[in-house]
Image 1 (cartoon, one colour):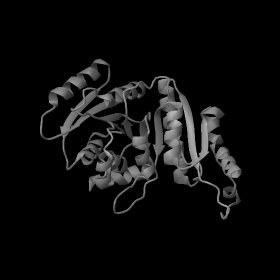
Image 2: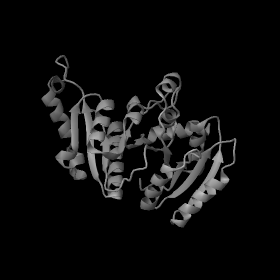
Image 3: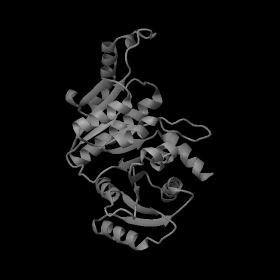
Image 4: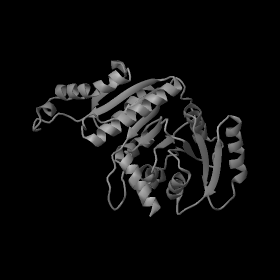
Length: 286
């Protein structure tokens, strides 16, 4: 996160409290980055609001620019601004859609998580992060190089946030139920699966001084276990990742982050591998 030089903050003029800006200013102060405020709108001029918010940031010692634009939808507007302004992080308030709307249309925030060429922090509430718990969600059962790099990125970002807020870092990984028919003896018994995941977690426990009481390894689907543990420990932010698939539709996020987005009471930081981010940026440049 220290490499982020500019943060894009999506401003929602309909909201009286700009909680995304509150989060972004905290991060910008810690990593000494700039902010760029964006209103995605073409029906009304919000320059006075943007100028007021930018002046507040400048008074707090944060370099801040702003713009207002619209390109065929919210997600495309944000993505084009990310590329144009060279932003390394997007911060946006998440307002959940109704069940009916989600059944009929893909939620706009899901599209942003799928196609944004930068990490995305979805802000769920205005509660303080200070001295809170940070939950890093990884899949210790995947050992390929791409997953390993993504796991390192997730835990390192979570550790940076934990340091920033003087909080506690927690690690979670869900494992599958045992299968007697599995060709790998490790996955035939619940105890051996748990031991395997425990062994795989050792490098992160040692590197980031994570104690056993802050390690959460359990059986079950990740999209159920992650919200359960996050709510149990009262996490302030959950950090999750996805390995994208390249193809006609671009990079598609695994649905875990999308499903947990509305189930979590915490803010959610979603990360992608560098090659996926590069692919998404190249699509925007075509």
